[in-house]
Image (tube, rainbow, N blue to C red):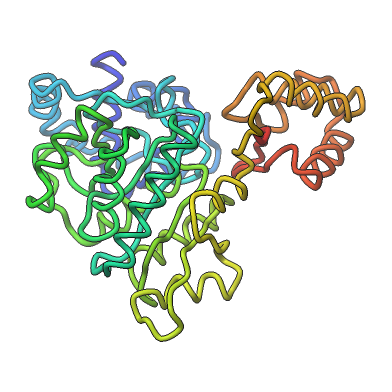
Length: 372
């Protein structure tokens, strides 16, 4: 990303009243952040229903204050800035309506691997929660060694997930609720340092941003949006993990939870999510892998499995499956129409049939991907 575009993205996020959804829509409508400011007076023609107050706010002098200082910090500390349209922007997160238009990243993990799992839970975890978390990550590492583990670097289950990932050789990303000029909580600084070399730290916040309460709630949408599925290991009846579960549901993603004893307050939230069918019940990594259709029978190659799968499909269904197979992050229905030449009404019916047969999975934003 060039300096001009980065400056515009930094400016956009500083303007009062412009949140992630509005910023994303502006960038999508105009094409890039720098054009938003360059063509500010033309915006009512480009976006017919734009509010005059928004156009006025884009001309506010606060927009470009402190930009040079932030750019110096970014360059000095070799921070990677990832814009909404950049190739390495987390593709699963991009599907979410409230995805940040700019992310700051310090690390070496690939943000778009084949498999991504978020693990969250209570800050006041018990020995049961710590044990279940470590066992889950250990067994997941042995069967799906390319999985990226995402969490929030908080006390309790979050840091257990990160440390287990480091212990068993999985890359892990900590999504933090402040700028990358600090680590909060400070007690996790050694874990965070190790994660930079075996994963990374990710945030939407500029330097000098304090870890305030509302930032943690905002951070949760990134944790949920980056992953194929979110695991709730242990949670009380209220708390950040329950909020994250609600966000996961709003994104149309999969949520799973480990059950606890009926009278255990530390698992009351997990038990309720399971009881209300808002989370699938799992007791092991094997349960999760099976639910996600990630398991591959021993002795069969991926190509052999795909060959037998596509043999059972009609010519048009096979065409859809092959298009999705060539795009592992998924495709939206309009792109599928263009690639397959199948009319949208017929394509929708065939996608529904393939979903019922467990061959494709719907994603947020009208997208689909093949189940592996």
